[in-house]
Image 1 (cartoon, rainbow, N blue to C red):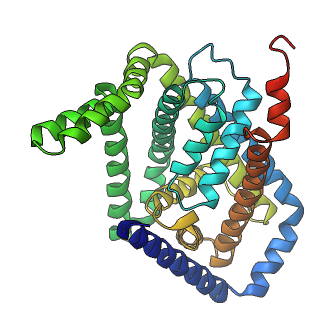
Image 2 (image 1 turned 90 degrees about the vertical axis):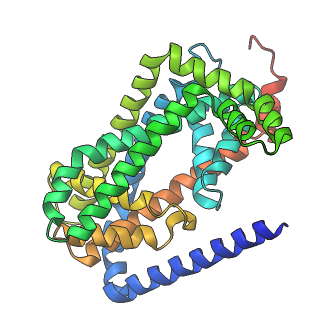
Length: 340
């Protein structure tokens, strides 16, 4: 392990420890007995939360499908579970979403070239970010109206939102120009690491070609992908409304929209913490108390969201075990005749 890798590992462990300590402090503040009582009362409704989550995942899978070639020989069901496997890896390992994308590419290797899958994943990631930005934009006016008495927080939210959207737009622009070609050209202009520049250009040529071709020729597909991601976000609003109603705190959808927008901005700022442990829960408590709910309700919702993520991650791990090239089911599928 290199010195840089050791430093990164130490930082990750430190952030994880800090997140766990923050979560423990939140539980102590709210009261473990009260939190457990709320969760016990909610227990049967958790199945409904998971059902909403699986529907959200179906919308996001449809969005991903639109960034793949129109006639790619991949059934929707397989793509759905490949995505579930990748999301599980992202949620359960400190790989900053990279590990899950590698898993998706690996599970589709028998069906598509890796460069084509990678290009679709990058495009889908951009459409997902734009879909989130649209939801945040819809909810920002309500959020700012509720927190205008705390100008520092309001300014931080606006700055984070603008920076996120600016970053997404800039990255899409870079993809249209060719990520690796641009990086290689920049290195050449600096007059350093010419060998690295050549490797970048040669290794990323296929990926650049797929991305530039997609953004040039399939703009309607990209717009459709964004629309499906927005649809998934709207289903998430119904999921939140369902959770709050089950907790005897029915809330209008407009307020759920503001809560989701606020929470998305806070979550995006906490991506460095592994699985956002503690930070995600603290963010939910901050959001809910800002909108007049109790800290107990905020933490209960956060724990329900966490349990939902763990259940769906377990489904994803099962999908990974079934679809991975070494599984017995995958071997039987490969051994079947092509026309069967």
